[in-house]
Length: 123
Image (tube, rainbow, N blue to C red; front, side):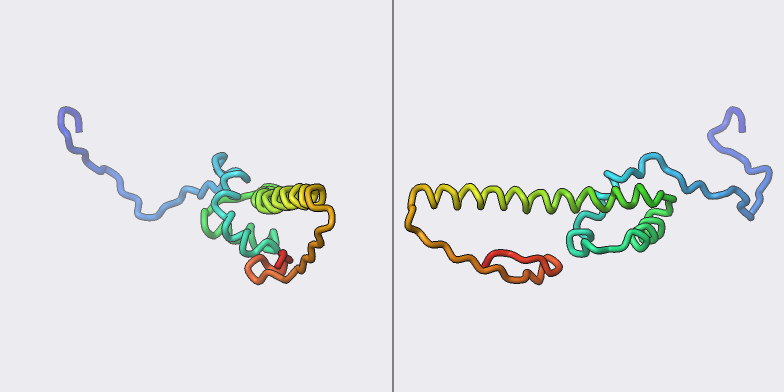
């Protein structure tokens, strides 16, 4: 109402007829991968279809299969990348050990790691 700090409802329609809009440009693969990095770390074999269904349920947005695939691979590359950098560090250490102690014998045993979905680690 003019000249007042209040307002008056003239028409009230109790049924909502607007369509929902499921596209959001801020929901990117990078954003999704950050949200689900821990879930993907514990379940790296999560099927893309199930991941997509979960995203749509959690965030009420429409995402493409390609976007979901990318959101899934980004954290896995980050996780596996850190493991490969550990392996490079290990290789350098072994080279230095062999160079500085030529008669040294190193015996390694790989065991299955229960925490990382069947991957092996050094024992």
